[in-house]
Amino acid sequence: MQNKAQEFDSIAEEVFAPLYPVVAEQILQITGKESGTCLDIGCGGGHLGLEIARMVDMRLVLADISADAVELARKRVGGWGFSCIAEAVVAGVHSLPFADGSFDLIVSRSSVWFWDDHLGAFGELMRVLAPGGIIFIGSGFGKQRVKQAVIEKMRERSPEWPKKVKKKTGAEHTPQTIADTFNQLGGLTEIFQNDCGGWVICRK
Ligand SMILES: C[S@@+](CC[C@H](N)C(=O)[O-])C[C@H]1O[C@@H](n2cnc3c(N)ncnc32)[C@H](O)[C@@H]1O
Image (cartoon, rainbow, N blue to C red; front, side):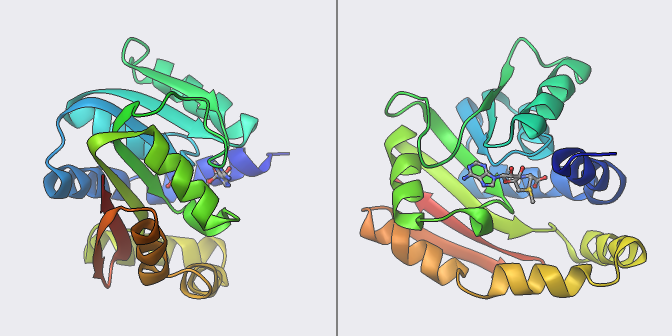
């Protein structure tokens, strides 16, 4: 029997896989980051952070509140041959075990919807972000063709999935509410939203 993290990881591997390199490329294009240290918070199996590390010369920290997810991410770091530049740690976003200003880029895909207390969580992200650093947070599929392929495959696995995602991502927290919270913390935000996803970009 698979645990929750293993279940999500097999979906990431079998269905979501094509979206990670597309989203990673978008993040790098928009932020212009290509060196320093990147944190992927709520990393699950680590796919997004690892795609970023594959594309640019950055150190990578993968972090997730679930020890099961971190075990998978750690195995993937080794499996992809990235042990010399990447590590995976168990950490919840509300209390991050990192020094102030540790990261030049913080990414987070499809995790923010699970966090309580956005003000506290985003305050922690702003604390560990270096001056001049950028947070890229939200959810998305990258491009239309990838989105359609993912939705079709997910419908076969679980017909209710598109509705569930819409409910989770569209209700209480939207890119606008996320941006408003970062603004309260002194961040400079922009929203990047289209029919393939919604992201908030926050600069310090
Ligand atoms: C839907 S998965 C997304 C995983 C990965 N970012 C991806 O796109 O493949 C959400 C992840 O957020 C993690 N998560 C939920 N609450 C968290 C918190 N408070 N701090 C850190 N991670 C959290 C979960 O354990 C889970 O691995």
